Length: 238
Image (tube, rainbow, N blue to C red; front, top):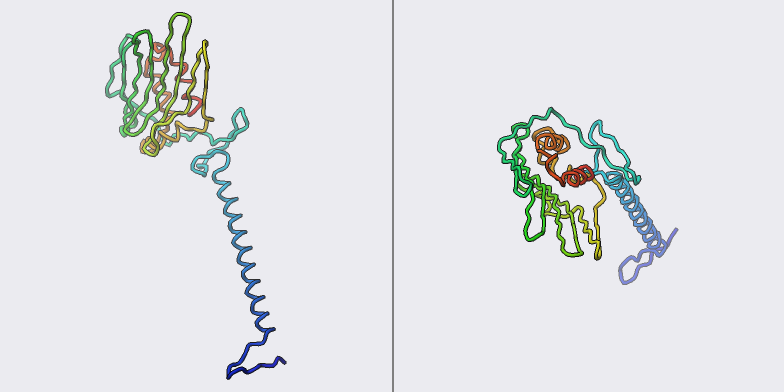
């Protein structure tokens, strides 16, 4: 048995009991730290699983698969339409001259309207062309520029996107300067166009991939000399 000492009318707690209490508190604290560490590790693994493989939004939809690109990166397969796509042209002005602006407004499933604008502008030997798909707050813009003179020339092309959640940003921009420095910066393909426009098209039950196919059929792309460059960017970042 342990003796209890009385000092000035107060009972002092035996040292062994104090030692055991402190040791028990230390063990409980250590157990708590280990549990928190384990929980944090499990959360990190769970969160990493959701955001890995470049899957925007974290989850795969039913019937959606994962495919790798030519560089071995893994991306979610494009989301398929939930219902048939019906589009009609509600307004248009298509000019025969390439050096003027043309436009076409498409209504998708009687719900969303997309404005498609294209054309070139020539001024003092400089040529600026663009192909633009817009809706209020949404934008996909291809633009290129060409200029030259005696013994020199320079060309550039750019692809930009915008959504209500993000200001206009550049996805790809290249400059070709045979007489000087050339440069190029292109983001890795991660479904940037779908990420911007599928939110807009959600009420229609379709995707931007379906709409692009309609645009290619309704717009006189054969008359647009720079269409192959537009198509390249659309396909790469869809």
